Structures are given as structure tokens and as C-alpha cells.
Image 1 (cartoon, rainbow, N blue to C red):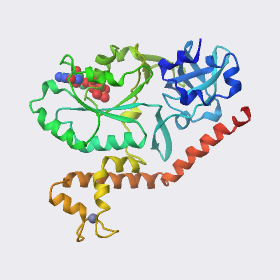
Image 2: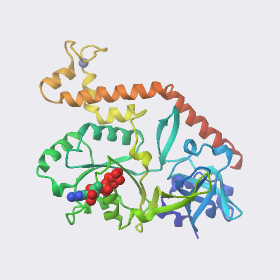
Image 3: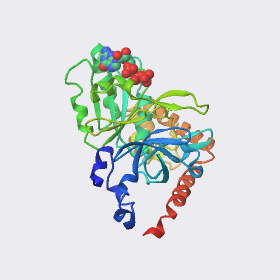
Image 4: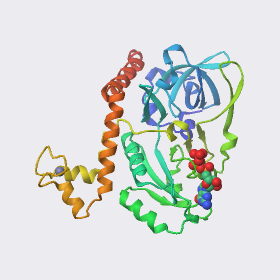
Amino acid sequence: MTYSSLQKFGWSNVFFQQLSFDEICTEGTLEQIFRITAIHRNRVEAMGANGESSIICGAEFQPLSQHLAVGDWVMAEAAHEHHRLVRIFEPKNRVRRISNGLPQVIAANLDYLWIVTSANEEFNVKRLERYLALAHEFDITPVVILTKTDICDDLEHYLGQLDSLGADNVHALSVNTPGSLDALSAYMSEGSTIALMGSSGVGKSTLINAMFHTDLATQAIREDDAHGRHTTTHRELFFCDNGVAIIDTPGMRELQLYDAEQGLERVFHSIVELSQQCRYNNCTHAEEPGCAIQAAIASETITQAHFDNYLKLLKEEASQKRRAEGAHAVKHYYRDYFKKVYSGRKDQW
Ligand SMILES: Nc1nc2c(ncn2[C@@H]2O[C@H](COP(=O)(O)OP(=O)(O)OP(=O)(O)O)[C@@H](O)[C@H]2O)c(=O)[nH]1
Ligand SMILES: [Zn+2]
């Protein structure tokens, strides 16, 4: 068996180069590498070259939700009939949020964020702009998907608004219209990881079932809760036959805007560029003479709604930051964490 056997689970050079020379030369290292598919209180489920395994996580990784997420690659050594977590590979990207004042990781190593919305009253451009900002912030390629076009009388109304988003990847489709899902296969190369986001009822599960010929209901797994009772939870990352990993977690579905300053600047780049043309450096874009943004709104180059949403998201982001005791606290937390995790490895090189 070689490392290429892990590629269908999303393994790539980014992770391989984090192995030390000794590790690469040591027999059995490959069997110690896993990708996390579900997280429980003290252990995680993971997929490796030899199939699925349960990995016990020691006190140094507690609480798990702050240290690792579905999609992470880890190293774990065999311990009796289980495995024991040794270390976490530095991820390509990580989706984080603040929960009760603490950073929490939701998912890791994503290639695409499928932002799902439906062609009915659920549709909301502001929400889409927010999701796009999130995707950019976390360095994930966003794909906007408009569902339920089969039951929509005024598709142009929605397509026009999607156009105004200026997003690169936009698809309108319906699971009831044969062929309309074909365009999505462009995102489904072996080893790619897709996470879904969107309001309840827009058709995320239906889309997954149709695209990947899977039945989400069959992805249930059993676990023992703290009192030894059996409970059923859903696997949050699963692999399809074509080598695509799907992440569908409640955490992704509930994600709020946080620390997305750069993401916002990308989605609202026209406003950011305009603001640099205002006569005064400290223009508040309200009533100052020579305000380029007000001029653009007056000439209908941008809409008042687009500008208002930018202000609203900026404000929301600022208040999230304050609540989290400053975004820097969070960034430092992660930097220190990775330093701590990887400092022990330097002497292996
Ligand atoms: N007409 C039509 N109905 C659809 C389409 N896609 C999904 N639906 C229906 O919309 C309803 C909600 O779909 P789900 O797939 O459960 O939505 P979801 O986004 O997974 O919802 P949550 O699990 O609550 O987040 C179901 O009754 C689906 O049959 C579509 O393209 N066309
Ligand atoms: Zn201005």
C-alpha cells in the first residue's frame, strides 16, 4: 500500500510534506494516518488506508471542539483495539466560529463551499453575500446553487439578482429537471471536499442524495452517550464512490459571520474601491461632498441596499470581534496552539 491510497479521501502533498523523513521511512506510518469523519466527546471516528477506525483523544486535545474538526487529518497510533491520537496535521483551511466566547472549529480542509438557496421566498441576496464573505475569509471556493427552479414562475427575477452578486460559480437547477445537475460535476474530482451551507428546506439533503446516489438517512452511526445509552448521530463527513468527501454538519448550517474582514472586502470590492476615491480620507459616506459612494448610488452604479448590507455586515463583524475579546486573541490562540502542537516535531527532522 502507498500514500496514494489516501488520495481518494483528500490526502495531498500539503499533508505529506508535514511528515518527517523518519516517519516516511518508518514502516507502518501510512496505517497511522486518518481523516476525521465524526467527533464525539472523547473520541473521533476516522477513515484511514485500512478503513474506518475509532480514535481515542487524550486530555491534551480536550475539549475536542477547540482542537479539531471533521475533515482534519491526524496521526494516531494503535492502542489495543483502538487508536490513540498523536497529532493533528496543519490544515489547508479551517472554518471557525466563536461559541460561548471560545473558538470552535467546525470543519477543515475544504475545497468548495456549496451555498444553497432556493428560487422562492427563502431567496435573500444579503444572506448570499454573507455566505460568500465567509467562504472567501476561510479560503474556500464558493459555489452558489439556486434550487427548485422547476416550481418557479419568474426565474429571471432570481437570475438577475444572482448576477448582481458577481460570483464566479453560479448554478440554477432542479432535482426534477434531468441534466440540470450536470454542471456540478466540475467540482467533483477525486479527493475534493465539499461542504454545504444554506437555510433549512432549500434542498441540501435532496441535492446530496441526487448527486451522490447516497441516502443521507443511511449515514447514521451509533454511539454510546455519557451514560452508556445508545444514541444515533449522523456522520458529518462521508466519502462518495467517486472519491468526493461531503461535509454536512449542523455547525456549518449555523455559521455566523466572524472575523471576515477580508472576505467582506472581496464581496464588496466595488464599495471598497469607491471609498478610496472619496474626497476626504475620513469620509463616512453619509453626506460629505465628493463622496464617491453616494455618487455611485445616485448614478445607480451600485444600489443603496448593497451598500447598506455592507455596513450591516461590517457592524456585525465588529460586534462579534468585541464579544470574542478581539479577533487578535483568537488568531493568537490558533498560532500558539499550532506552535505547541508542532514544536515537538522539530527534533524529528
Ligand atoms: N420541486 C422541488 N422540490 C425540491 C427540490 N429540491 C428539494 N426539494 C424539496 O424541498 C424539501 C426540502 O428539501 P431538503 O433536501 O430536506 O432540504 P434541506 O436543505 O436539506 O433542509 P434541512 O435538512 O432542514 O437543512 C423537500 O420536500 C424536497 O423534496 C427541487 O429541486 N425541486
Ligand atoms: Zn465617501
